[in-house]
Amino acid sequence: MLSNLYQYGNISFIGGGFTNRLHNILEAATFSNALIYGNKHAKFPEGEQLIEAKGAFAIKDANDFSNCTQ
Image 1 (cartoon, rainbow, N blue to C red):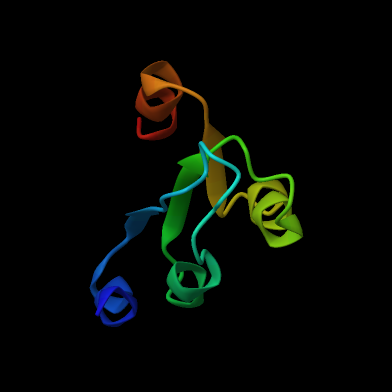
Image 2: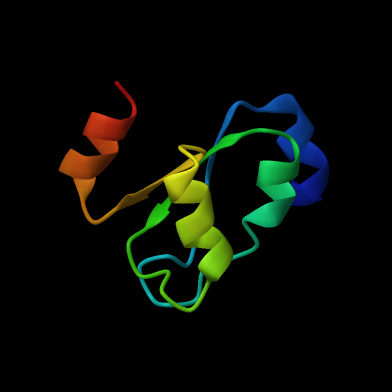
């Protein structure tokens, strides 16, 4: 169901990034959503590539979240 909703959004907060279990980021990226996820994404090279391409933000706390949404 969630994969069908990404087409209506602009920003997606992806779960699992605080526990090294990042959920599927490519579904949301397919619809050009800006992505926000936790900073524990080392096992997911596409996560780092999206950050480098300015399509995603990795955050570690509420301050980071506030900074990337301004």
